[in-house]
Length: 341
Ligand SMILES: Nc1ncnc2c1ncn2[C@@H]1O[C@H](COP(=O)(O)OP(=O)(O)OP(=O)(O)O)[C@@H](O)[C@H]1O
Ligand SMILES: [Mg+2]
Image (tube, rainbow, N blue to C red; front, side, top):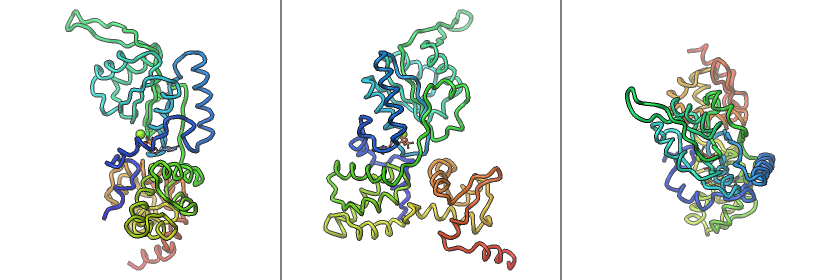
């Protein structure tokens, strides 16, 4: 069984229909990330008091950390309409113009995967963000002319897992930039506690901590792991999630106490065994492990880097000593073998 499809934070599965139920709607329900929450709370209150739209917000960070959730929360806290789209869904200028011209005053407009916006649309967005107007070409041929059409004041929230790929001129037009990072185990425990209570899952306190440690610091992964443990508890035990269920469940899902999945370990092992521990280029590595470069870079690598298993160098990816010891592989032996064969 390929477990990754259940745990990969980057892809929506049918289970995500339950995400609506679990998604916090106001800042007070959003667990963890205290500094970020406090700042946003101030900006939102200030904008509301001035009866203005919130400044444009740029959200970046690995998948499943709560970017979409936060965007919805900002709209709710502002008491504003919320429009959602993603850059790949916007094909032509008229797609974007259609949304911009039908917004209400102070609306929150969320564009996911903003790094994939087409250049022509990006230009339209510049003017919209700055002047609350759009350029629109009317007529055809020699009689064509450009009209400036006013649009309501709005807040653009752009989210991306690839902050580095967003064009400078676009990025510079966001007044607020939030970089989301992995959650602490304590924050993840809070999220699991909240989810368990919403879904009426019976789970022991020490099992919450155990699960939190294996959740890659990612709320979406934590919620999915909790559901899997609920399944195991139901079928293999008496319905209550205790440490026996979690230990057995994690073993069956091949997730270790660092939160690494089988595929994470395969990536590290491939670098060690095929590329002497690195450096190896991301494209080459992606092909070697049979993974799309996007999921390698967006989902697997950030956590491996954050936990100190992997390093990004100008010449490519390299594993660290921690990777050797975690996989029980000996660095010297590895080199010796090369000399032998
Ligand atoms: N701080 C939080 N507190 C409680 N639950 C959270 C929090 N952040 C995220 N979640 C939960 O995790 C799930 C994933 O969050 P979300 O979809 O917002 O992530 P994302 O960053 O937009 O991911 P992607 O990059 O894949 O779009 C949500 O359904 C939500 O229930
Ligand atoms: Mg999202």
